[in-house]
Length: 168
Image 1 (cartoon, rainbow, N blue to C red):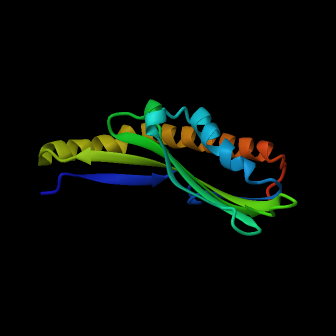
Image 2 (image 1 turned 120 degrees about the horizontal axis):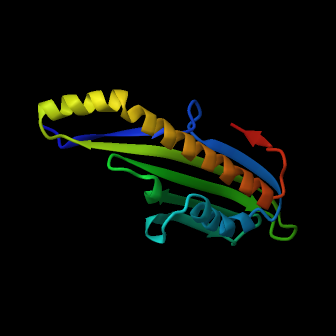
Image 3 (image 1 turned 180 degrees about the vertical axis):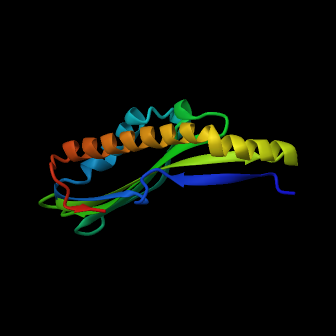
């Protein structure tokens, strides 16, 4: 018998993630600001914040960059569910003029994990999840979505953009 099961739930349904494309002056400056803004808005502990990939190529023109950050949101977690967030940024900017483009992807999700014990407990847990726990899941989704929208707004303000060039 398996040890348990994990449910991964998208927060931004029906979308999978926010994808924003910004064009303007010095998009590379966002590269330094994104980790701090993520930690501030999602209240991520340093031990639960991960810089998964950082690439920076100054060898040519344009300068290209890519970053991937992820955070486990412990202050919103309970015994079963842990909220997560992942932000990707990819872009380029001209070495001389500093004009460029950055694409930012914001992907918050919930990860719910249940461990198996015995068939009776599993049946009762299924009933609990389908009836009572759904309200808690909806609260997690609502809170995560609000923070993702605040993060998106903060990035637009940092980049001094009031409308989004590409929104998906």
